[in-house]
Image (cartoon, rainbow, N blue to C red; front, side, top):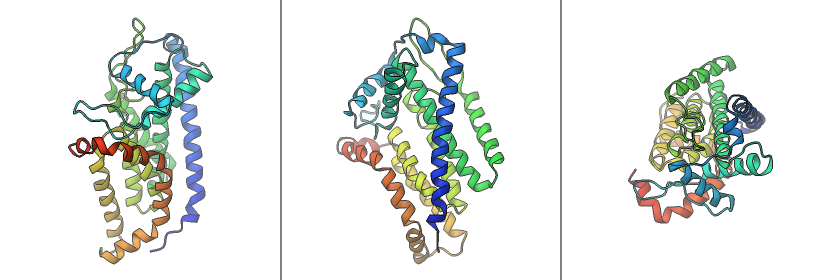
Length: 284
């Protein structure tokens, strides 16, 4: 069972570059539209409340590289990782501190999440394109998926007395909504793997760890889903035996190694925080 990683390395690099460009364009477009139709959100100083205010405290720690856990759960433990808060901290540094494109840290966090969701949308699109062989078909599926999320989002509350809160799945900074677009990317990558595109493992590993950073329940769900995807991929090629399964793992070891290497910044915080929170994670 031979898999040529070199033949796939250039397309993967191209997809990563295009995903960053696409996300940047989407983020700037969202900023321009918001500035045109809701300038107070972009220009005014906004005071946050509730969970959004809790986010700000974590982002402050992230800006000093002092944050190693996720948000606190009502079940009395910290979720596994700080990835999303470092994304928002980066957005705050770029959009608020450096470029002054927004008038408050809260707005910078929203546009940071827009960027991240666009990034995972492109990863989903790329994975689906590898399955269908058609960019237009993959784009149609993604358009329907995003439209469904918009329909489920409900209304967005605007700036009122300098406070802001959103239930918009596309840009919400409420932690439970962080995992929506990464989940879509992970399932798209799993479908790609089931279709025989083993190189999707490279992005599957960090994408799944992003999910784990968002919610402890994925500590069980991701291994189960991945095992099913690999099982179905191997099963399509004949009877499943231990030797065939072992050969498959050997054939994709380069993809696994690259995926784990890319995931190092995501793995370390989980290891650091596991000591005090592992029981809480397992209880999910």
